[in-house]
Length: 126
Image (cartoon, rainbow, N blue to C red):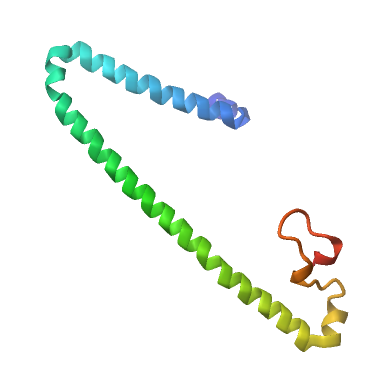
């Protein structure tokens, strides 16, 4: 219970630092145990195989990263038409509703007057 309370009260940066430190000590400890158990002369026979394994992992990581970039870019590109549709629906609702639309929503805003960044002015708040 005490450990859970300490973890919940610790800042996020400290928790991340502790987790990274634990993994680092674990990997260095395994490396030292392997060197002590089998010796460097036997482990040096596998250097070529280890280099090939690292290069395969690097290529797989690069391909995965490329797919992630493509998917994110496609999702980003697909948002513009959705925003245009929402904007046209809003304008259509304002035109069709006419006077009743303004009475129901006195603070109805026009998307043309909204700035692209920063806090919206009072005319843009719904």
